[in-house]
Image (cartoon, rainbow, N blue to C red):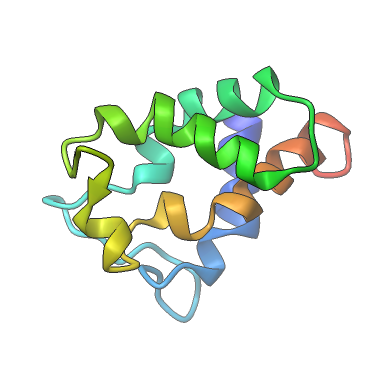
Length: 107
């Protein structure tokens, strides 16, 4: 799991709205990064599907992760609606990064 976490930190966190100009996370101890929290489930989702259709990954994410998230109720998520869920916002990049790690394109 470390290789995926490292690749995500290097390739996604620097773009995250919750990071500083130098790429460090600005979330406080009361906040949690959904990408980091659900990373094992995200990797499992990516490994369970073999397609280039991101919508299929997104649906599996909604079924496996979002449906169990405390911010979601009946498929409505106030964080996603507010564009404030890092997992939803960067999911296409996350999938791409995991696939690149698996292909040996990222260490």
